[in-house]
Image (cartoon, rainbow, N blue to C red; front, side, top):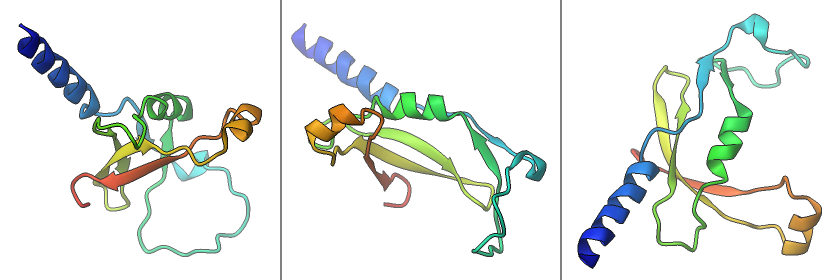
Length: 117
């Protein structure tokens, strides 16, 4: 019975971890983008995207710590060619605990490519 429960819990964690991230990326129009001046970098190919920053932050806050044996959350990021890249993301705190208390909005994560490590 314990084995069955352990297998079910493992599958539940893994299915939630590798499910698509609830981050809504959508195509943006050039008129919807604020311009802060002339671009310093010229690109041959680009793609303007909008995202729900609150949803992204909420999703990433659920990422397991780098030291945990759990797999990272999968974050899908749109690429300029129209495709997307998936990254396994874990929480990697680099701020001293005292500074974290003073600035609670600072978080850091590390990601590694899922399809192209």
